[in-house]
Amino acid sequence: MTTSEILLSDSALRNNLDFIRSLIGEDVRISSVVKSNAYGHGIEEFVPLAIRYGIDHFSVFSSDEAFRIMEIAAGECEVMIMGYLSDEDFDQIIKKEIQFYVFDLERLKKAAAFAKRVGKKAIIHLEIETGMNRTGIKKADMLQLVSLLNENRDYLHIKGLCTHYAGAESIANHVRIKRQLRNFNQTDKWLRSKGIDIEIRHTACSAASISYPKTRMDMVRIGILQYGFWPSKETFIHYIHGKESKADPLKGVLRWQSAVMSIKTVKEGEFISYGTAYQAQEDKRIAVVPVGYYHGYTRSLSNQGRVLINEQRADVIGMVNMNMLVCDVSHIEDIELGDEVVLIGKQGELNISVASFGEFNSMMNYELLTRLPSNISRNVII
Ligand SMILES: *Cc1c(COP(=O)(O)O)cnc(C)c1O
Image 1: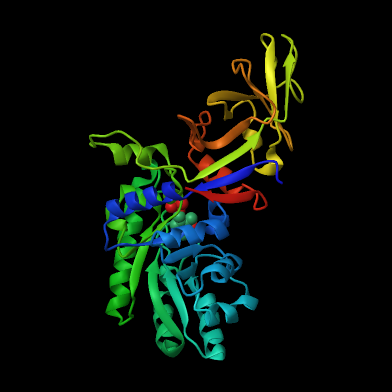
Image 2: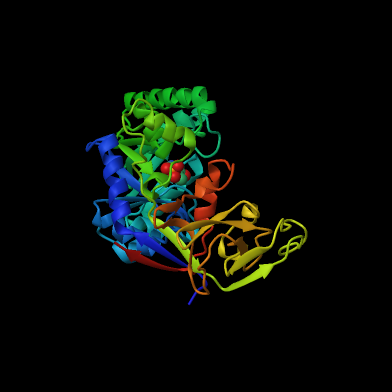
């Protein structure tokens, strides 16, 4: 028994995928991004649900995550590694027909060499540097890229051409994103003019899919949106602009809950928990919850976080400890030991969507979700 548990809502995921499909249309394929243990939702629990609702392509960061998907869903979907791939894993990746990014010529040479040895084509996605300046094949390497691709035709299946935008969730990056899109389209055209046969093009993450329709192309790589969170407030505002209904079409898939472990009263003037971060301005009733930063509840939510108990909000007060947090439940009359505490998600009519914690930037959602430890028990509900 862990001190908290995670529940995944089947119907919320279906709702979110329906929404995304209605937005991008039936012709654009969705690759469900399940890196970082499916953004904390759990690969083993999330992937079968997504498959049930029609997802047949998954994106991960590294080979270990790809292997986990193959364990539970080989033959039911395609899997694509966008990042790390160790030399020991190349053989297995190629044998299992797992797709992977090629973001420099070194990896391209390796892919061809391993494919030759295995006797099977490597299924690759060429990632192009368009302006993010992270991974991606540079313009200066393009001629050499073309000759390497031509030399190794027998060992390579060029499945995709792709890139990633440097912050499509923020209007501050608008000019840079537009330039990246232009660079991508130019490179695409140029490669085709050199006779390079590319099956699909994909560039958009959640934010780009919403705010820059031209980035959708043949496939979109959707992470945060499918889990029911907006990449940023700006992206939500962009979506809602000019719409009649201002209601949020997304539903949170994940509920993270624990239970009240201890209740007590504290006198006015006393400091609560470590140090002097919080002083009671009047007599208080507090509840201790057995979840701390070890369990993924970040310390930056000290004096900032909110939880739900008995369908009411309660503030997290004082520092978040390693294994516990304290909340102010002075206003919750009938609270008892063992009462459910919701840290993320819905309880009754109220909802803790991660982003609503104080004035945090949008990256908070991504970080909080992906830090949910993999050993918390996860179960699917309707
Ligand atoms: C994580 C990631 C995505 C998905 O991003 P979201 O904002 O969660 O939709 C897409 N593409 C790449 C390359 C990524 O690393």
